[in-house]
Structures are given as structure tokens and as C-alpha cells.
Image 1 (cartoon, helix red, strand yellow):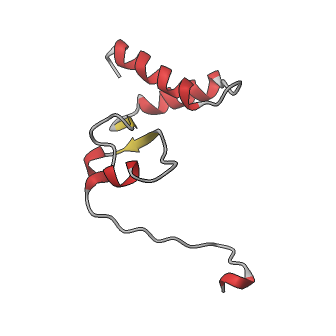
Image 2 (image 1 turned 90 degrees about the vertical axis):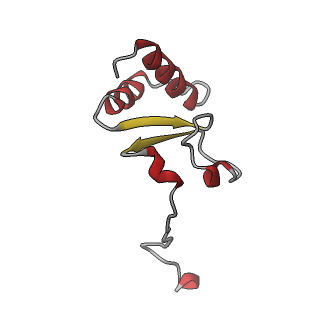
Length: 91
């Protein structure tokens, strides 16, 4: 991440993701270090590549950590939802 203005924006976003009284400087440093890796980004709900289908969901995440091409989030997708430990009612 070469652009220091963008770095500052990312740090502010990471700080805002913490709840009141939950500041975690080490966690923010780890997140920032992860974002320094190749082909990684943080998408906020205001970023154009943020998936519109996800933005339409109540309680959607305010930001996404992305590894790879963020444009892939707007392509057709399949989701498989299940449980590793199903309850008796779910069997």
C-alpha cells in the first residue's frame, strides 16, 4: 500500500469497525499488515465493487476484506449453507 492517504483511510475504517470501547491496536495492525499483502483490499459499502446483492441485505457488513479480484463479487455465485453438527430437528 504505497499511498499514505489511502493507508490513513484504511486505518480509520478499521478503527470504526470496532465497537465503542473495543479498540484493538494489535488487531488493527494485523489487519493493516494483511492488507499490505498482494492482491488484497478492503471494500466499504461506498466502494463501487461492493456487491449490490449484499448491500441490499439488512445488517450487511460495512466492509469486506477481499483477496483476489473484487470484480468477482459481482459475478453470478452459488452458496451452499449447512451445518457440521445438525440438530435432531435438522436431520
